[in-house]
Image: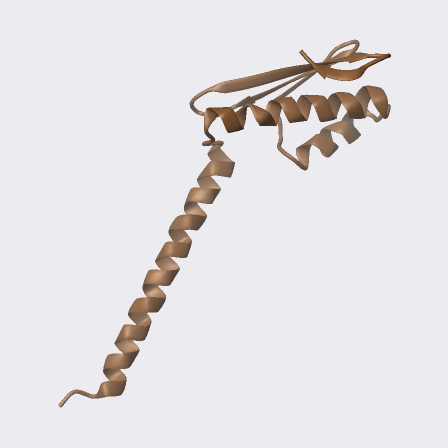
Length: 115
């Protein structure tokens, strides 16, 4: 005769192992998305636009320092390249598969606008 409690423990460990494996796989997928920037192209275009607009507003409207504005933009998504001009800001993001860039220009009467 089989011991029913031993059979129940084996089933329990199997369920725990499957659950742990699923969480591990989901975690690895999320890690790869953020670490290697494996994003669909339409979604990935949003990040440089947002970073350029927010960085431009921080630099030229709020008159923040460059370091402060870089830290402010980094809390959303870290740009690979930050090119500050006389009245503009260009940011670039790159992944293993493509590169995205955006440029925001400051105009006194209109504020920062994406080019």
